[in-house]
Length: 295
Image (cartoon, rainbow, N blue to C red):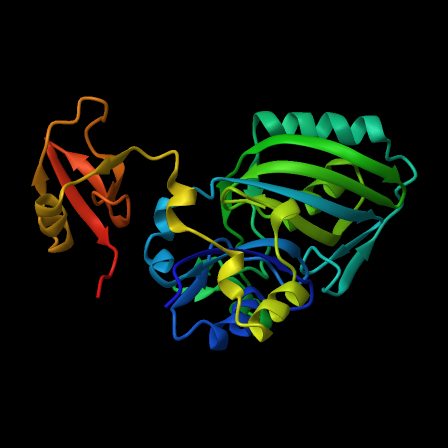
């Protein structure tokens, strides 16, 4: 059974679920999942969780994400991207790079974003895209999101390319649509690459051909990042054999740890530095939250 994370470079044209189904039959029955959905249009970093990693994905930070987007001025689509139907066209002669930059600066300060109706956010228990496809009118959800930083990489109208650093839950499609409106025209997302997510970078990602090569040669483990590598910034404790057994049995363990705040997360190792659990420190006790399966 494999355990860990695979920095998969998802190609465009397939869903995130379809991407992990390529891997699943070749992982010796290990459970598999991913952190942060990528739309079929998008490519780039898709962190894949394997084995025990599927149970601790909540402890892996995916708050910051980096993307490179390409948008096109002059038209709007019903999905806010190139996969949708064009619903409106407009002139974009007045659009200047300086104005685009100014609006992005404003959005860094405050950005209340409206999600696309063709999205997986739920309204009354139903995903919005399911309602939209049935012709049911949907009132899009609005949320406060964070645009941390940006760089205009290219500006050759009608095309423009921007690198952004943003928060979890940020819809890049909505950003491009909003930019068009604020610039007095329309715009839609043409292509999207996620370059960073959950501590992974596209420069160290593994494309589908590389993954298939290692699957064929039964060496997929060479591409898997150990679980504790992504938790290296979490406080770690090493336990002796007796205390290890207590944690493995799911029992809390009384211990004074001055360096740790109350309810802070912990990575727990045995005396041989093997990962045994993820836990938290509460009122003087180490409380195991997720225990690594052991034979």
